[in-house]
Length: 285
Ligand code: ZN
Image 1 (cartoon, rainbow, N blue to C red):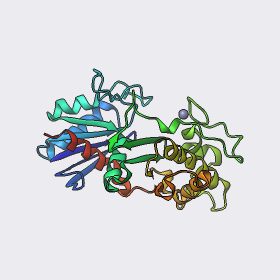
Image 2 (cartoon, protein in one colour; image 1 turned 180 degrees about the horizontal axis):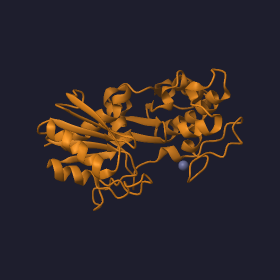
Image 3 (cartoon, helix red, strand yellow; image 1 turned 90 degrees about the horizontal axis):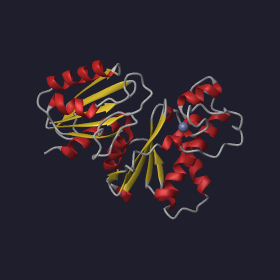
Image 4 (cartoon, protein in one colour; image 1 turned 90 degrees about the vertical axis):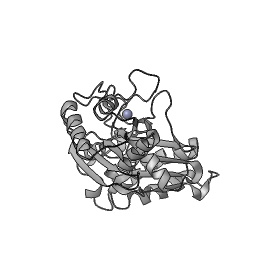
């Protein structure tokens, strides 16, 4: 039996199952302070019987360097109380099992890559919600550099009808997250994208901004698919609009042509937790 945790800023999703695609029990708890949240999660796993390994896909930033003494930590997050939290070490100690650890978005990318049958050897997963994050699988492996990618903080070219908005990222202003996250949309137009009328210019502005991120992924690392999840991505028609805009931005140049695709998650809301169970399978004896 494998255990998985999708550790998010607002909720933790917990699951156990004999394999990543066979979840036998799952449970969701709110993310409170670390001591309360981690203890509650550990207690739930203890009730599920023995597991052989645990996988954690976590909000970040996190330390992924296996040679670092801080491997498995949530590091300098602004989320109150969570900075320098040894989340992997806590569960390794409590549950006495090996722990696989990666970002929440790399976990989701792994799950979507497997669901796609490994086509093209590559896949990127973008989550567009309260923030914007991206995970990347290349040659079947999640990508870490000296740290993990932070795709939400690239700078897109500004849409011609959106030049006046300064953006809301506290670090960069008008980076991708500063322009296209849920709070950025609300700051501009006082509503979520799905609440805006169908003819509102916000739809084209947000689609253009996200499409640029997809084009960067296609052009820089030639991923087969960009999978887009998260709350903003639930806006009806948005992902289709992004795909159409990305085709227009490329203008027929990329050699991958129509094999580059922008789609909704095959696993829907479950990509992250299934990916966490895959991380467990990767370290299970
Ligand atoms: Zn930023």
